[in-house]
Length: 187
Ligand SMILES: C[C@@H](N)C(=O)N[C@H](C)C(=O)O
Ligand SMILES: [Zn+2]
Image (cartoon, rainbow, N blue to C red; front, side, top):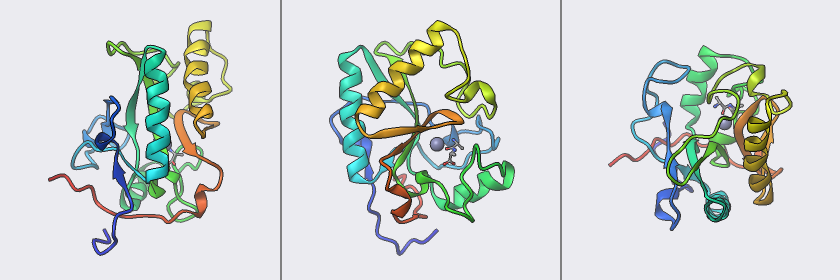
């Protein structure tokens, strides 16, 4: 941790929009099989938080809301992930260009109905295999659910990656953003 680093991140909970949370990295129910976050928070740089709120408000008008799996991720956690699963198709290499999560400009997410009902996206979150790929063929329901997710996210400036249906990077210039290693303030 670099505690002298001033945080440029904002907490999505401070915005006027209702999100659902399923932050498994704050539990041991994740591919690391260990708790790597001290609390559930979605931190992002302001520009990305604003775009996400707009996307969520749009989803809400359609009868859905965003369920957040992960937002900003400290570089120290990225290193733990890489140690356990050093595959650049599924985990950004912290010793290379890293992850857009480390820059507060990527989100892992799905959408759920406003009553909390889950939508079938064809694989679980952080399933590292071909069923999670955005070009893998699935049945009509899954295809329609994914289309709903991606069409709205793209409208608000987010792009998916090929191997993970749940991962979105904000805009194309984001590798130029600063990599951060700030702990969550869980007070
Ligand atoms: C680990 C997974 N949830 C994820 O976010 N992977 C991408 C590729 C990343 O680490 O940036
Ligand atoms: Zn991700």
